Length: 444
Image 1 (cartoon, rainbow, N blue to C red):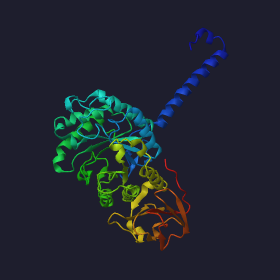
Image 2 (cartoon, one colour; image 1 turned 45 degrees about the horizontal axis):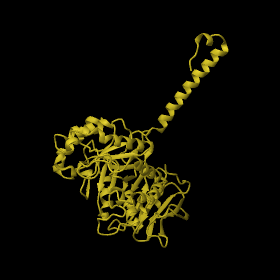
Image 3 (tube, rainbow, N blue to C red; image 1 turned 90 degrees about the horizontal axis):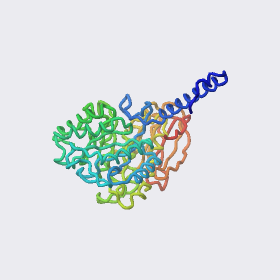
């Protein structure tokens, strides 16, 4: 609207009108600015004590990942919107994606564009990345972090000591100001990989300027990035066990206990309905590996065979039981007061704890003495050391990790030993014992 200054100066009423309009406009601009800040999804960081992740405001961030390796290459933008919306609704906070898709890095996306010109990583194809840009924007709208792999050992001889650094620098520079990103690499976990890893990391540092966290997800399994744990650029550890479920707890616990302290993630075990393991992958196995990770102090990555292979049933697979049960898992752990104070502790069991084999009974407690949590996949009858609760009268409940159903047990003093038996008919169970005054917190 155009104002005639001569008219506005004519009366005090007109002056007041103009002042009101100016102030109103300013308030609208300020409101928009505050709204943008409140809705911003800045890069996540590692907590001061190195145990967990925090968001851009320093608030504890629960890392629960889903696997969508081909999200950038083999799904349309509409499909990506559907997938990311589904994952957000189920409580996932991180989605793992390979920047060039599964394989050698030379395959085209749905538009026929390949990541590199002339199959040379030193010559990125900007046309390929326009779709990546769009998917990243959708993920940001859903407040989802994307853990993006910019190198996989299947690139073979195409990735060299000469082109690795400029490739990594180009990619990370392009997305330096994109807030919802974490970077990762997929090398072999051996000494011969170190020189190439070093060049890639140099490129990340050149392009990213330490804006985002960096990890490494070694392949093949079983392996952990902790073979380079002391490297200052390694923000958190990532583990892959493939089908060796018995390795999840000991490997995660080992990484959790390393110094300097860094978050531990177990990001690749068996995929729900996986077809390459020689045995059926049931929802029970899928949730067992998740609870084994979490009770070792780690953060888990779930995956479904039909999603990463882009099977015809990929859309329906998003709602399969294992995925729904990750929602329950997140609710269990984020419902614990100050969940980030969790410490793995098998001495919570007086009897019945088990860390060996595939069917484990595991326990953890709050460092503040406010709660205990146990996961029972093995022996159904256990005895719990109630003195691990140090903040008053306790209340206990069973949670069915398959359905989310809760079965109250009752209250008791935090002294001595108390016997508990997993509810009949449950294949596994979560036992939560907390200070009676503590309410159940809702997950974000």
